[in-house]
Figure 1 (cartoon, one colour):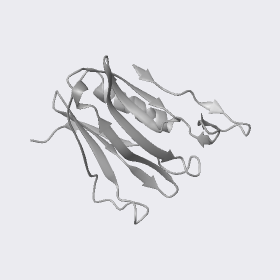
Figure 2 (cartoon, one colour):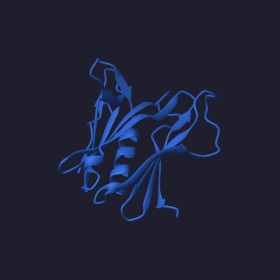
Figure 3 (tube, one colour):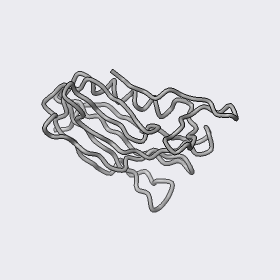
Figure 4 (tube, one colour):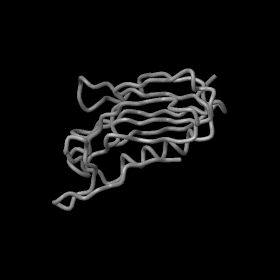
Length: 157
């Protein structure tokens, strides 16, 4: 099950999401697509391990921002990598994550989001397995790249 926030339209005809403080975050569905891609990769599996790593030798847009990746290894040996993206004033970045180790033995049943896609959850029948706090911006809509770069492949080793 994927629980997405519905796109809204503001008074200027822009699409996006209204946050709890009344701020509007412009989006064309890119951030929701990242949620869909994550859900397709993880639903029906268990998380075997979670870790952070540098994503690649690519240089981040800002010198003070280093691209990094959240790596999920699933019970079937699949490696799901969520790579931070930076492109001028647009970005998507994992700020922090919390793994509830008491729930990792349960099959993943869904991915849901809250707070204008700033909090993501990977869920099971008994609760949230993984919580991720995410910052994102479309920058100058929709010229720059944002949304996680998600790579799915076989785990090494």
